[in-house]
Structure formats: C-alpha cells, structure tokens
Length: 339
Ligand SMILES: [Zn+2]
Image (cartoon, rainbow, N blue to C red; front, side, top):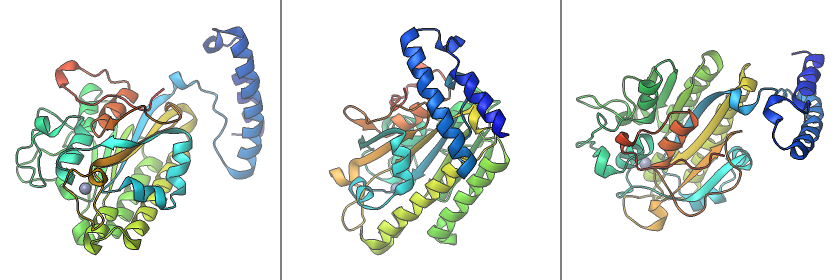
C-alpha cells in the first residue's frame, strides 16, 4: 500500500458519523480523535518498521480466524519464571489466566482430549494414554465441529505426539475431516526437531494458504522434563524455545497480506503441569493447574474472574468462529477471554 493510501484509510476510519459509530455522539468523537492519533502513529511506525497497516475494516466485518497453540506440560509457576517475551506480548493484548484446571488424571491423553473436544473424560472416554474408551464419534475435536458446521472453512493441524492424529482403529481428536493434517513423530525425530518442523509447517500454511482455524501442538517441553526428571534448566530452555516458536507463528499471522481484514484469535494453553521431578498424573495443584491465553482484537484485556477449565478452550475457539454452541453437543466448557 502506498503512503497516501495509508493516510486515506486513516482519514476514512476517523470520520465521525460513520455507520458503526452512530451510537453515542460524545464517545464517538472522542474515540474518533483517538483513532486519528493512533492512525498517524501507525503510519509513522508502518513506514519505519513494516508493522501492521492501519486497520480500516471494523472488527465485526473482518473474517474470524483462530490459531490454537498447545504446548505440552507447561507448569504455570515455571512459565512465570522463564523469560517468554512473545507470550508476554500476546498477553498485553488479551486475556491471561493461570487459574485453569485440567482433567483428572493430569495425563496428556485425557487432557488434550478435553482441550480439543470441550468435554470432560466422563464424556470423551479417554482416561489414559492408551485412548481405549475414546468416544470422539460423539464428542469430536473443535476442528471437526467447525468442518461440520461450516464445511467451507479451511482447517489445519500439526502434531508431533502421534496419538492425537493416528490410532489403531481410527477415531482421533484431530480427525480425518480436518482439511490438512500434518503428523510428525517426536520420538523418531527428536522433540526439539519435531517442534521446529511443526512450527515450519504451520508457518508455511499461514503464509501460502488461507487457513481459518489451526491447531499447532508442541511437545518438546514435556518430553524434556520427562527425560531429565526435572523442572530445571533443560525444561526451562525448552519453554523458552516454545515461546520463540509462538513468536514466529504470530509474526507469520501478522505478515499475511490480508491481515487487516482478518480477526485472528490466538489461543495458547497447556494440558497439565508437573511435579518437581518432571512427573504428572496426580491431583496436586502443580499438576492440575494450567493456563489459557486468548489474544487478538476480539479478546478482552485482563484476566478471568475465578477459575477456568481446560474444556473452555474448544468452546472459546468455536464461539470466536461464530459457531452457535448446540446444547445437544453437551459441551462442558464456556467461552473465556472474548469481548
Ligand atoms: Zn502432556
């Protein structure tokens, strides 16, 4: 876009009396003046550093999109201690709560199943990492729900913990209705390498295709803690690496040529915490407590009153995408962090 084009967009955006500013004259003119200043700043910043173009499309007219980044096994008090500038930046434009409760047991199979489906293990049937009693047919993952509600949407998922996408006998939390599914094997590739490849595949999708809803799973922090039997330096380094991968994904989103017409919600969460020796599965607070971050123009800024739950993640994603939650789905979560 040319410099004059940017100015034009700002001028139009700041016009008092535009249809979406019709209510509340005083508030409107104040907001318009504020936006004019913001636009001037935005132009200066844009011309210097290639930041976002001015946003001349009202939020309600932009295309909702969602990116869920799930990092396995991040203990919230350790997350608070590790420098994570990219996650922190997301939190400044969103809702962050570290009072989220996961499943009993605090084990990846049931926990990821609850995050992705929006129901507790009593419904989805996964109570361990064997996935024996799974009922994804009755309680599918949110990307599958999206495909059924709006088949025209483009959905994408990449995981490097294989049972989320591949199980003997079929039926997985990330099911075959998802348009593009990328499966990596963290055990075969090494977890740091697998997460790097997962990030690269997701960035390729964001940059060269037009995804509407995405799930990116990063497994290295959890596996590093298991391998070292500790929540020490290697685990913390793995969390810092995941933070950099979050930053790369968000940069790719913001670099989309159509970003100004899109309403991206970035969701970030984890499946469970862990004990000091790296284990998990019990019901102690350090194992049961997780976090939810919801960031983007549609997100409220601040935190969540009271507790939130791992089942809230899927419901938040569906709600952001404009899917009406059908009571017959029997979802256990609620939307959190949206304005
Ligand atoms: Zn896990």
